[in-house]
Length: 371
Ligand code: UDP
Ligand code: MG
Image (cartoon, rainbow, N blue to C red; front, side):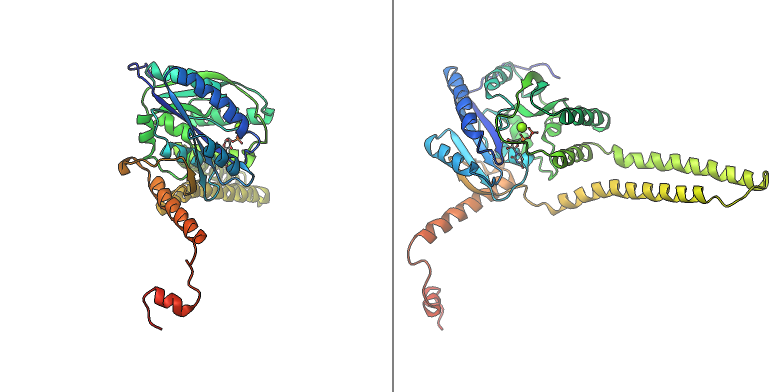
């Protein structure tokens, strides 16, 4: 971790909060975060909250929309489809325009009260403050064990130094946010991305609370997917390992070949070894399949990257101001602005009268055609 460079002054902070089916926690989150806003206000820092609704299926959007209607500090956007936690955070980073952005989960596992402390650390001259979990309350032994195994593996495989036991709870300054907008890989592992970006980074330790309400949206399958994204995006070791593996096996098969020659010519005991043939057959086909799978994982990523699809597209937004500077906008933010404008236009039109001509001839006349 780096030394601070200079003291910085912070005048505005945005909390970026990804939400997926969080109807039970949002009111409490808002209450606690608002208390933090008051604390910051006393130090002359304005705070707003940017909630990214990852196309929830419960009442999350209605609750957020209501909050935004009553409090201009609450900004809300809604994805047109569920794109996952990492992409929801990305959208928040694309739209936030404060001096500092703090990413935190809606479920209050990352206490909003710590934001003030993080801002203090940023003011000392740091650009990235990773919140590292000292303890993790309310997590199953299984989750803790898999998390430990994951970081152990990642430390050995990854090309960048990734801060252990840090989730996505971190504070980042505007220069880092702007830089992050150019990182558009579809398989996202944001904590690795920030560690790889440089700038002045430091760690703040904290005790992670249990989820306030609701249940985790990271079941084992999603955890494994995130782990695969981390390893395949930040390490080419698996692909290189195939080479070493095949060389080792080639050596072993040579030894086996030598031994069978010896058995044939010297010992003259060449009974057909059914067991060894079956064993070798299984062993090698298994190995080949595994190798193809590893190569396939990279090829699949190249394919998806090659498609260059947008990471997300918003369908609704409230209290959000898109950046005036086109250059500073990510392609997704530009796309979302157009989609939202079209969405608003179509809702206005359909609520107005005489938009749909009643007959074909009327429609043709409307369009300047003659039937
Ligand atoms: N989340 C999201 N989209 C998803 C899954 C999760 O935006 O598809 C949000 C979720 O609402 C929460 C955060 O990501 O604010 C972390 O999810 P969760 O608390 O379920 O994960 P855990 O803390 O159990 O790892
Ligand atoms: Mg959580």
